[in-house]
Amino acid sequence: MLKRVTVYLSVVVISIYLFFTYDDSIMTCILLLELVYPVLSFLYLLRMRRLLDFNIGYVPNMGEKDKKIRAEIILKNRSKISNIRYLIRIHINKQFFQRSIRKKSAGILEPGKSEKAWFVFISKYSGNLEFVLDSIEIYDLLGIFYSKILINQKKNIGIMPSFNLMPLEITRRTREFVADAEEFSGEKSGDDPSEIYQVREYRPQDHIHAIHWKLSAKEDKLMVKEQGFPMGCVVLIWLHFPQKAIGGKGISELLEQTASLSMTLLEERCIHMIAWFDEKNLRVVKWRVNSEQAVYEWVWGLLTAEPFKNQELESVYYDEAFKGVYFSSTVVVDVTGNFTVNGEKQEIPRL
Image (cartoon, rainbow, N blue to C red; front, side, top):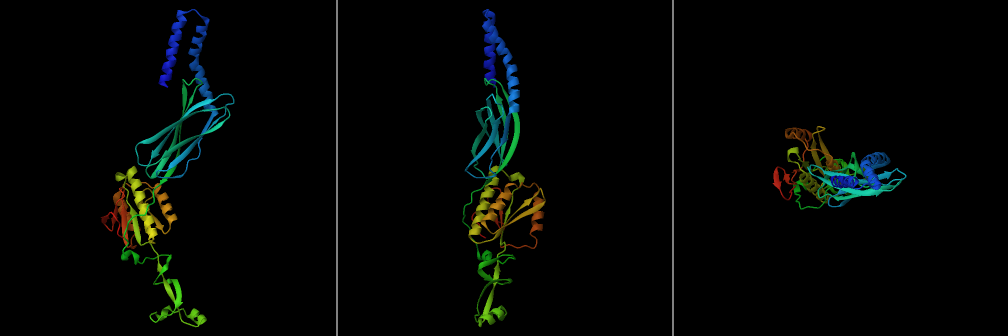
């Protein structure tokens, strides 16, 4: 704007010089128009502000890392006679990043028309984004002066991490660990009397208490019921993200490494638990992960989580939440994406 105003003032100065140099009625009219123009511009811009409708349109709730995200701003010119020349300014805040991405889009809106201004951007990190409609600048007919409308409308976008299978070793300790659960394996028998794995013919080594007497009488041969193998959460993945250590890259690393570990455990048919400390609500958030859908659910829940400040409080709530609960392995994932398995740092988790 400063450049345009400077040009305008230069023209006015030249017109004043010509006005005193030449006795011409045309120069007088030109000078009067130039001097009155700021007032006319002010009245025009005041009117156009009232005739411009704007709003954040479609902005996706979820996006993917390194994939294009499209967001729209909807504008409508309610004037029946005049165009509206505009400039939209937006910025995108990344979770735990100090710097924002700033973008702008200019255009001319015809009388009585609506228009969508699209903004396309890519996030290199997973986590939470905040799409903010900062302001809209409306320009006068000659584009010299403008009026700025401050808006500050916001919309959050969750950026999902990449899900990649990763190398890990699952030992017999985890494979054979028995945990209390409401679900039972359809591929392995066990010793839980509350659930039947399958019914089969009697073998000499079977215990007499395992005979299914009613079915045996019906089939006219001895039948045995095998008990179910409980599929409880045998591995705990604890997410540790204190505020003093967190950063935009850190939360992205934590999300990606944990999501990849969770997906890999599912591929290995290992039901597990994801948990973290929610200091704001003074609780431990727990997610039982037994399906791919559950992975997306806990990731989405973590996107809105806040880092904790009090590490001692985290320890107290951790101990209280898992008192009397046992796991074959406990994996701690920190903000650098590193794994600590049962107190030992490991590049490749051995559970």
